[in-house]
Image (cartoon, rainbow, N blue to C red; front, side):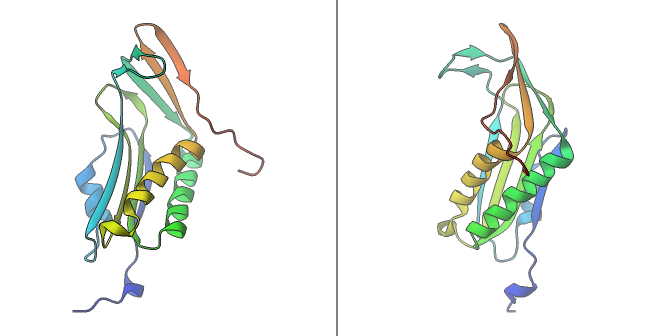
Length: 159
């Protein structure tokens, strides 16, 4: 049975959640009959940071302005699609709330027919771009106190 690629809708999932990230469910939703590769990045809460300013973390608190964050997540997915036409499915999920060490905080997954079609690069671009433009705030709490972690993104007019 031959599938016409024009009839296949490439799935795109993006959302903010307080719930645990369900990798198997997300992969099922972004996998097509033509999918042969998935590249997945998951960010985790570190209990111990060893580089730059070494310290311990008891937990992180993530906050987001959901409508704007999800609009920017959509933008990241659209950018991935414009740069890597081989990408079939995309999932971008960010957790909010109080998250403890060894807990996944963010997931970027891209699927494609083959591993050598840019799927790794697309997932890497996704997490880098999410950190650049998606309005998510992170407070780090540890034995030495608490502080908001500054991002590098400063919105320009119209963004």
